[in-house]
Image (tube, rainbow, N blue to C red; front, side, top):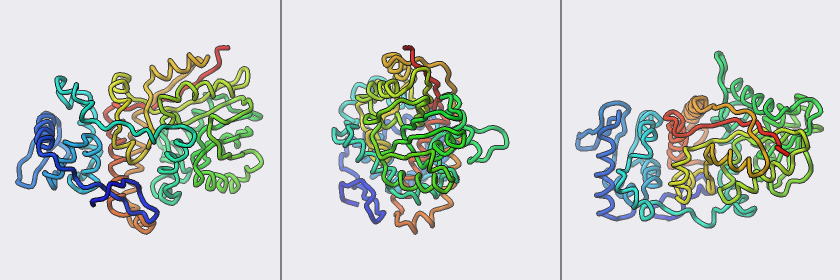
Length: 405
């Protein structure tokens, strides 16, 4: 574990940097961590038998020196890498991370917040979501392996928040979510629909079953291939066209434009162009259905230039908007938000089910060529995300928009 490469290779082996050496930063990190954890409803244990915290879900520090060196030199990134390396573990990582997520803004004492610029990594210029940059960023996540995603998604292959009602299993809750966003966009028989962000075709299929004609855009080669296979298997190839095309290059006019959890991959620099594109492609009287993961506005302002673990390992170039940003950008593009619903708790439940499914599919994941470091990476990703929604630090919204023109 000495290489600086952090991508999953073609053989599924995940390279992980060795813990950097910085005794002073490790010393500071240890004291800050102990100070934060002592008042949280968690139990942090160390190899010498010592524990801190007020009791609750367990976080076991396996290798304290490596853990605090990673934390001290790379903060959020180091904490995630420490889990990947096995420097800490937990029988229920989502539960133990939730109290930390709930206090995200205050874990570091206010007087030390000013030092963020010297501690937090800065976002690499190479991850800017230009058309070429977006193509590379998407490739690093969505083209990992369709079979990998099949290990934890339901049969609809839907990779976004579900919407549960009593009696729903995950597949039914995903279809409920899709129907909700299609309803916001007014999709019906005869509708011309543009989908920005294909996924693996579930929404396009659902819209076509309503009698709509769908053009779906993706820049993931792997997703396009499987989505087209699924569309054909559903007997809907005459109603659905999947194009390998950046949203900025889209042309035409559509009665409905839908985009589910794609805005998170746009980047702040391109938010105005994204909303202007939605408005440009919308026919008079048409509607937009937008689903977006959001973070608190103050945290967005504090961290928008930082580079975190999720961006480094899961969604390069990604940035969550806030609700005020969506409202502002929509208004500037001449769009009004007419309807909205929050599904944050439903996302926590969705992620919990994904994490359980992934955990029971470890043999299959290994058979696909992914190593133990990758498995711990993916476990941390799902648990970290679940904790964000459980704590309400993160939320997810469906918006129904119209043109104000």
